[in-house]
Length: 69
Image (spheres, rainbow, N blue to C red):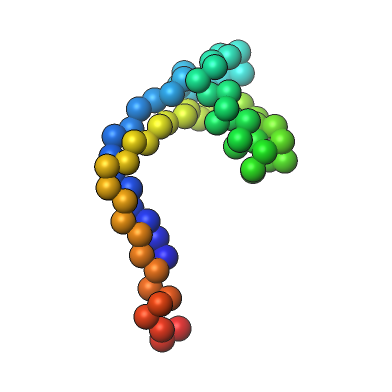
């Protein structure tokens, strides 16, 4: 199984994301990420950044449908 996304990418907020850089553009993604992956709180470690992908083409596949294991 897999997916390939082609398109343009833009930086959202500061890079790297630091604890003191309160940016409204990343508040919602950080809240959603925290809820999904860390049990509620997004931890800013100063080593990551947010990117927005605007896809122009999406391809996906699933070879399980072919059978044989």
